[in-house]
Length: 115
Length: 111
Image 1 (cartoon, one colour):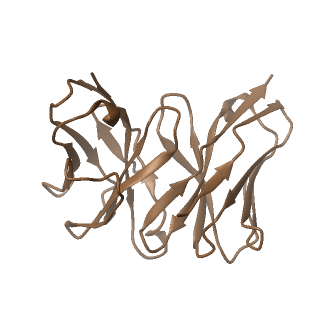
Image 2 (cartoon, rainbow over the protein chains, first blue to last red):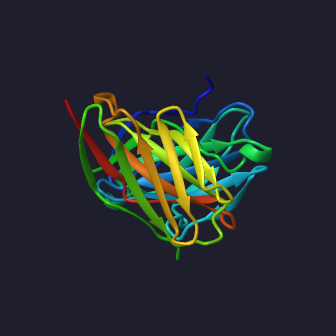
């Protein structure tokens, strides 16, 4: 069964460093998403992406964040200058077309720790 | 903004039924979802229900939707120890193409 994959599974970085989180969505999906889950808190929407541009973004998704689909398979989230409060689990998701376009399938997540 | 609420914890005995409840605020939600998260793992889609349905059954899972009260429930029949996990309710915000999640219900299944 097709699935969303994410790399790395864990990332430790120093405050102020840039990180890039990578995702490979399900191959025939057209909509891509990033969510995050700070430890002990709810899963929060960050951004949605369609047709090579951002469709929607939340108030969390400020200028420090960017997304990109650099090729036909990868979808990345970049945090330019990490802060301690960026420590969280980051989930990528994708959804398909027609009646399935609202149903989002999630990857296993990348746990980011900023020191 | 939209909000989704769940109780935090549920403990049942193996073989019993589990019922996890959820309330939501967005009356325009088109789809409502249940996801399962096992320790250290991602969010596994369990089932979903379209807002014009009252009930959906999928093997051991039954979803009930009361649109008037904005109440959603997930019933797991014959609960097994492997069902121990956190269960998230989520509503789909049509305008934002985003899911709003509840805080999750931790289901503990006692042997």
